Amino acid sequence: AWCLAIALVVLPIVGVLCGWFAADRWPVTQLTVQAQFKHVSAEEIRAAVKPRLGKGFFALNLDAVQSAVAALPWVESVEASKRWPDTLLLRVYERQPFARWNSNQLISGEGKVFTVPDAADYHQLPDLRGPDDHLAEVISFFADVEKAFVGTHLKITGVTLTDRGSWSVTTDTGAQIV
Image (cartoon, rainbow, N blue to C red; front, side):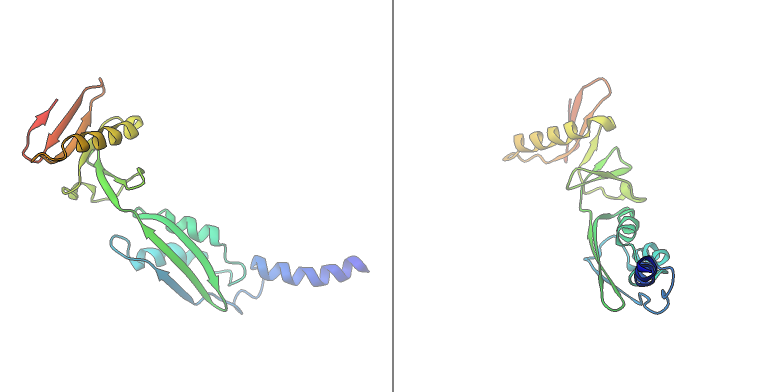
């Protein structure tokens, strides 16, 4: 009798939380996004979130929503929360590119490489090149070279590490130091 009583109390609660029933009674109808959009569009975020909204407010998996939005190329991190009765709140932080990496990728300010379709269009960023497993070494060398050239009229626009270990530095005047 006790097992039946407990099952009758627990089963509806578990059913609502898992989205087995009553999902249409408490649907998520509002999406609030807090972000400074520069590269990510609201449509991209909506498209990433929409497939995960079908089970209702209580069964909404915030980890799945965060993962889907974080998979967008320009998204650095996402915070997701629910607001009763029908709102999903997202705080989206975009990646800030620091440099180009091997001409077809970008490096974020946190030192992570990410791929975007128009990475080659960011000519104003420094151009860093080298083997993928030496990324940290190239960034460190670039920072050291920039410090060494402070106070001169030259601006460092790129650093290259070849496969055989030689370095070259490019300046804004087109000069190359090997």
